[in-house]
Length: 309
Length: 252
Image (cartoon, rainbow over all chains, first blue to last red; front, side, top):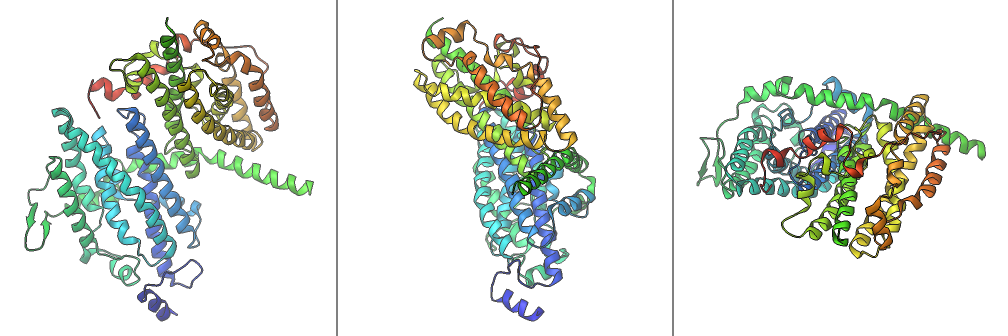
């Protein structure tokens, strides 16, 4: 069975929820899809905290729509994870106990309005690079969710970049605000692609199963090439002294990521880890009575209908 | 006051209601009881911000000069805001938010159905769009009222408490002052006094179905239309207007 499964994978056939799959394949997907879903949901916070302070009504409306989209992505992804035989409640429980992770970049604070631009531009760009490659992932529901999500993300990316561009066309204070945001978000955005290929714990098997289609370093390079050009186009300086165009490779060379910082934040020592999780735990706990009321009302309604019949 | 000035003031009232209530709704983003509801509340917040923009844009046109929608949202202080008090009360628990929306939206729907026929074609156009949204808001509100009122003991008591706490703020929604009276006379504004009975009827029906008690009380607070607000509005504006106050006159 394992062999015929791999044969299907090799033939680029999609695996569907009712198909047989190795238990490790299932668990790997649950881990990856739920981490992705949690990232969308936790990602509501750093941007969401600027909804009430957005500098114009148009920006407010765009940001509301964006954050609503992110929550919607979380919803598709939870639904995709649920096709693997796990409930949303279990997934949320794993998030709250720390058994399941979310993108570490959301553990950084969004201190100024420019951060909303930087998140939309950089974080969504990085997400797109990764997610475009996942449109061909071997698990059908995940691949289809990625197709839908990518369309919306590219819209968000343009909106984020537009915020940065507007700031760069503004006064000195605004340009400094934009540069400061890039300085703070640049390296964390590179970390979004994970460890170097050689050190990535799950990469080899995931590539074999075609859950993952391109390597971390490969995706990171594509992102850097693209983001550096965009930064230059609006007069921003990428905070990396080692950054240089390499004619021979046809790519930008860039400095090494501070992997200690990466580990530190993943392990819970980023500026906002505690707040991000506590915020979600608190909202979920405050919602208990509402979810109970819904369940109770539905039950009453069903039994009334039953009595009437 | 010219008719244009009166219509502008009227637009600002309706825009302020929508902006301030939309702000309170937007405070729920990432804090709702579950993800589907997070999306729904954010979506309704977006409807209200959109409605505010349409009224403010029209007010800006009527003002002439450099005024834009943002001038009204970001550079006026508490005394110049004319929203109804019910819109500015802090978001409270989920029951408070749902009940407030239900009470407000039930009137908004009746109101927009009338404003759609205003002799002022711009107001009529805005109302036609708002009516569609309000239809959805009221349907959603009714479903929630039933679930909360007729759900668990806890949800019932939270919903009843919210109804009781909000009831005295509903009277102001129907009051017709001199400015509104002039515009009603001119066929431009909606006679909200005339909507009091149909509103009461439809709201009572849902409350009763939800096993909630319609308050029998005569407390009634007013002041919003005259710029007399609760203490909460100043803090709301401090947050909403932070960027324009800290960095005046810039484009974002």
